[in-house]
Image (tube, rainbow, N blue to C red; front, side, top):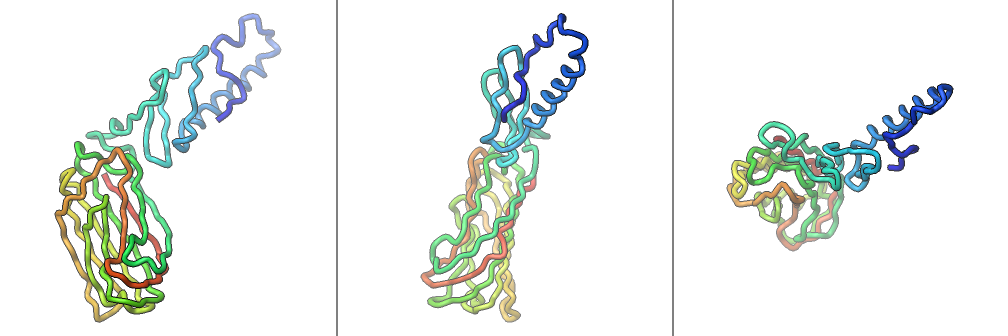
Length: 243
């Protein structure tokens, strides 16, 4: 962000005429307003604090798109996200809605939603709860009866077959909760529900190792597991992290 005036603690000089006081005060207000507004924004827009006639050491910047917090060391931005909050928890929960449709992709991955770095706590700070809720409507189908697969960080934590996937107009809803009881073996409880009265909800529990490292992006993916041509419109995939 470009500032109107360069920050300079040596101005105005003591010899400044008294009739310039109003202008000096207005410039000071502008300088403060612009720099306070620059304390949060996207990661790419982190400002480079001024170093001439200024010392911004320990200034904090909040990257709202990645949920990260940085502190100015005097020469560079240093991430301090993990030190914010009680017990090393991140400063905020992560909450995201992503709308996507898909067509003729089975058995490949249908969609991927990435939890950004620092959205979940790392393996050394256990306690994050990842909630995943997704819904989609089948609009056309041909081929073998598919199974639905939910993957977290590349590991399949939910695999379930449903005859409803072969029915045009069927709406499927998946709710999954992953408890990071340990960094290597989180427990996952998931439910698949369709709008077909004859198909009961399917509940799956798992202790499969879906290793989580909160310092990098964690992909959440869903897929169909057999060769079939499926066209569907996705209502949403909602991913929320509670810490």
